[in-house]
Amino acid sequence: MPYQVSLIPGDGIGPEVAQATVRAVEATGVRIEWECIELNSKALEAAGGEIPQHVLDSLDRTHVGLKGPVTTPIAGGHQSVNVQLRKRLDLFANFRPVRSFPGIRTRYSDVHIDIVMFRENTEDLYAGLEHEVVKDVVTSLKVITRVASLRIARYAFEYARREKRRKIHAIHKANIMKLSDGLFLRCCREVARDYPEIEYKEMIVDNAAMQLVMRPEIFDALLMPNLYGDIVSDLVAGLVGGLGIVPGANFGERHAVFEAVHGSAPDIAGKGVANPTALMQSAALMLSHIGEGEAAHRLQSSIEWVYAEGRHLTPDVGGSATTAEFTDAVIRKVTKS
Image (cartoon, rainbow, N blue to C red):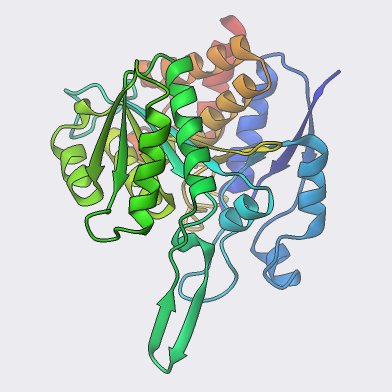
């Protein structure tokens, strides 16, 4: 029987990178029945800014989603689609692995970076509890709970044990937010005691940002509340070449949504030069999640081979290939592996 997967192409370059990714996944030989769903700015506007029910119904049927970028308005408009999906489906764990990539020159090319990040996905300032007290005075509530903090900490430590990661840093600002970030830290410490083989350390978020720029090689896994996780994970992506090559995944008890974490890039939409690497790597995570580890490895190693060869790279990473040419190169390698 084929696997059922909800496919959300999204906005801008989303449909282009989604089509390329579907081709690459199908080249692995894994049989997937894609349930394609329209979820973009137009669909959201028609639904009053809320995720249409048919999107949630599809994910409830398949339990697995592959999602391209969806545009989020700034300083107004509807709530982020990502935030809505994470809340509605209780996708509490955001997972982003970042590794140095062959063939991409960065400021850190002489350092091998291999950092996995775990970000609590459902609360903190992203709870969206904002209120204008009086004109030009706004409050925003930061929500940290024991249940959510324990859950993300346990998820991170279980992953570290399973994948033989040696060290976890909990990132916080408990020197200032003693109650909220203090609770998060206490929960991390409580969970860490059950995993004595994993070195547990803590670091204030501003110091962590500095150390990541100065000495990224000292980090192995980062465990963070929602806001810090959002900011720091983009910083770490910048160390290896940017969001265009970094995968992302969101896990809950019943659902998993794999996504490109970059924007919709409307300025290059339709030009055939979009880089599908981030979504392809997210699809490799998806294949691993559904139990197709060998196919996941072939897809991931084929992407890396194309980068190492350097002949079919898209303009954003210094090449001149089109989206289709990059995808064809990946597929040729996948089918020969």
